[in-house]
Image (cartoon, rainbow, N blue to C red; front, side, top):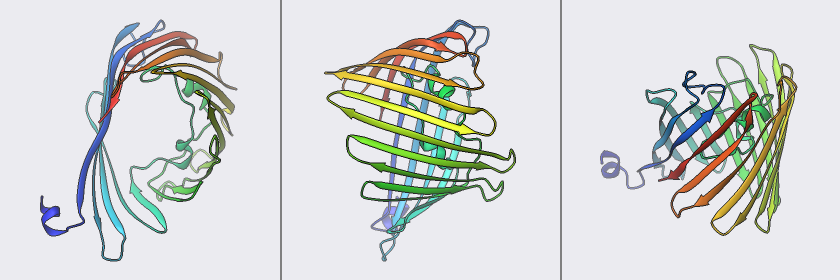
Amino acid sequence: MVLSAGFASAEITMSGSANMGLKYDNGGLSYAPAKKAAGWYEIDMDVVGTTETDSGLTFGARIQLDSDYANGDTVYGAQVFTSGSFGKFTVGAVDPMADDLGLTDIGFDGIGVDDVAEASNYTGSADARWDYSVGALAVGVSLNTVAEDYGVKAAYDFGTVSVAAAYDHDESLSNNSTSLLLKGGAAGINGEIYYAKDDITGDSYGVYAAYKTGALTFEAAYGDNDAAADAAYGIGAKYDLGGATLAGGVGKAGGDTVAELGVSFSF
């Protein structure tokens, strides 16, 4: 209310997403090792405040309110940013550039196939990043001003096909990683190919495919890496409820049989 009264261009918005359902792991759930099956929920909320200067620059701040069954207490993440013709510069709880690349998982929250595929993705961190896009091209740089980690990313959208590549450097572990993501889709069929390589895990890779017919989507995913004893894979389905999605899947991850069923939605 104070911002609205003082600045005609100031704005505060709230948005978020949530999910709930049931998870199963025959080796014991990561958040409840004594249980093979248990309930799950996750809530992600963003509060964003922005104001625009007379010169056309936008300044803003974002607070993330995240909570899930495993962590219990709500976790706060904060960012401060400015944007203009130069792109967007953000400081605070930001993700390294390589985190923008990843494989789509199976289910309403994820059974873990993507974790196996992305084992070589990155180990670095960031507290600042710059993002810039022009037309179909998007580039970015991230860094941690304390730990001296850094990363770069470039992506291009050709229309039915898009490609993205990233490089990450972790100073404390002396670890370097590169990752590549190729995505494409046509006639209700969508696919992804992901590959990453680093100095610790070696190679990791995965594929994802989905077929959409009406409100129903069938999907499958596969992931593996040099350090894993077994590959991960799964199949699943999603149904668009109109404002929410019912999703479920079953597969193998970490040598265990895993499954989940639940709903997800955004607001």
